Every structure is written in C-alpha cells, then in structure tokens.
Image (tube, rainbow, N blue to C red; front, side, top):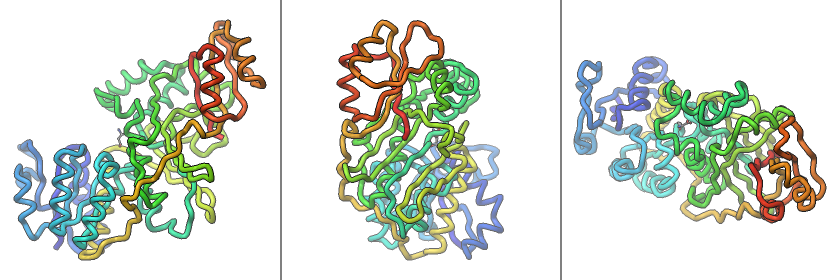
Length: 401
Ligand code: HSE
C-alpha cells in the first residue's frame, strides 16, 4: 500500500482525490501497488464531504507519518508551498505538483534536493494541464536537439481571443462574460497580462536547454491591447491572433517571450481554440510534433498530477532523471529578434509610415481613420526606431513566420 497526502483541497486537489477513486483499478495496476489518500491538508473543514475524515490542518502530521511516501502539492503560490515541498523532499517523500509558480521559481533547487534524498519532484501538471508535455520533453525526445517550442499555454486568454475572433466582440466584453461563467478569475491579471504563460514557457525553456531559464528574464506582453479591429484585419489576412509563448535556441542566441502574434490558417496552432492548449515542438531529427489538449480544469490537471504519482510509485527509492541545472541561461534581448509586424496608425500618418518603413503591404478593411500595413522582416530594434519616426501607432502585432 502506498499512502498519499494531498496539500490543498481546492479545484485540483479535490480532482486528484476523485481521479484516484474513479480510476482506482487502472491506476493500481499501472502503479503495481495500491494507492490510498491518507490525508488532505487544508485550512478549511469540509463537513459532509466523503473525505472529510482525512482532512488535517497541521502539516507536521503528514511530515511525521512515515507511511506517507508521496505528496500531491496542489496549493498554488510559493508560500507556504516552497517550505512544505522542501521539508517533504528532505525527508525522502516524493512531491507531485501542479504549481507552475513554484516550479518556475525554485525548480532546479527542488530537483536537486529530491535527487539527494532519493525521491522525486515531478511537475507534469504545471504546464499544459492534462497535456503530456513535461514527460515527452524529459523522456521521449531525448534523442533530439530541441531548438524551438511554441505554445498556447493559457486557456483563459485562448478562450477570450477565440471569442473575439468568432464573434467580433471587444476584449472587455468577452472578459466580463468569461468571468461571469467562471472561466476567468475575478482578478484576471496573471492570465491576461501573460504572467501565467510566462511561468510555463520558463519551465519548458529550462527543460529544452537543460539549464535554468529565469521567468523574470522573459519578455512578456498580454492581450489587453488587442481589439475587435485587430481581428477584422487578421481575417482579411487569413490569420488569427493568439497569445504565444515561445522559446528559440538559435545561432544569434536563446530567445524566450510571451506576446500576442498573428498566425496564418496554415499553422497547426491556428486551430487551437477555446480553453484548449497546445505545444508545438521542433527537434532536429524528428522535425515538428504537437501536443494538444485541455490545459486547465479540475480533472485534466488532476489526471496529470496522478500520472506523476504513478511514476513515483514505480520508482520508489529512485530518482527519475530530469535535466534542469541551476546554471542560468542568458536570454538574448528580443530587440535582436527578426520578424514581420502588422501595424495600425492614424490615417494622417500614412506618409510618415511609408517614409519610415519603405516597402510595406497595406491591409484595408474599410476603416477610414486608419492606415494599416504589414512590414518587411526586421529586428525589433529597427521596428521601434521606425515606429518612433512614424510618430507612434494605434497597435502593432508581431507576425509568426
Ligand atoms: N489560469 C490558467 C489558464 C489555469 O487559464 O490556463 C491553468 O494553469
């Protein structure tokens, strides 16, 4: 019998208990052991809940119980999750987590502690919810040199952008509707400003490079400036707008960023809609591969946590290799990155824009007050200089090659 403790009985934590109960027969067979939830740690009580008898409020009960060998950390945030995780690992108890914030900020340190204590720190659920992406990067693509990852890593913003695209409505209106339906948080900042996707691409970039990509070094831009007018132009160009998180290992340096991009219908990520997530990976031998599915939600995310529990059960006393060193990756300034841009300026800046940008391709959707165009490929630095010469713009969106 393998005894488990769940830290945090919120959406994902209660999902973990439900997945273990619902799929008990399959899970026990695959783990080659019987798994049982012994404790649930939460500040609250849950009267009437079938698992209320397992709820404890003192973490020491879990830490001091030698029967508990696997802990599911589904609390979120870094306080007290960091201390709790560290204490568990130091005692040789494996930790499986959905906490991208903690993994992005302390991943290599916690992995090292797990290794020193012959246990595991696993985090499949921290990126892409239920989509297997950590395990493919860690185990399946080990013969590859991965040079590029492009992801739609946030369900809330993908839902908002999909609605804006399909229904022609503005950002504020869709956000309000998404909040009313419970899809978006009351405080949506982490999602709409791109911070959530930033943590997730930091984790994927670290696994891609084998070193530590600090999320604070990643250029991050959210979707709050995207309007229904942008989607009108996008349609005209046979494109859509997606919040992309990307990582590129190039001869010019290692680039990582989060920003809205225009992508063409032909791109596999174009069809990733609503709350779905996808990660598009390029390896030098395999070429392109894509991982798609539900990137958020109770049961999909819990399923990924429980898959890590099964892995821990299969590797009791052994640490599964994970290449993520503490050595820092120097991120190249995105000002050096080259791409095309879509730009909207007030109509009276048409001549200034033509003077500054030279060859450009006008995009006309009949908005008389504006002049809109696609630029040639140039560096972000050159673009900033040209837009300054033009006198500024109404909006600009990067174009995915
Ligand atoms: N807020 C996140 C999202 C939840 O919308 O994707 C999953 O990390």
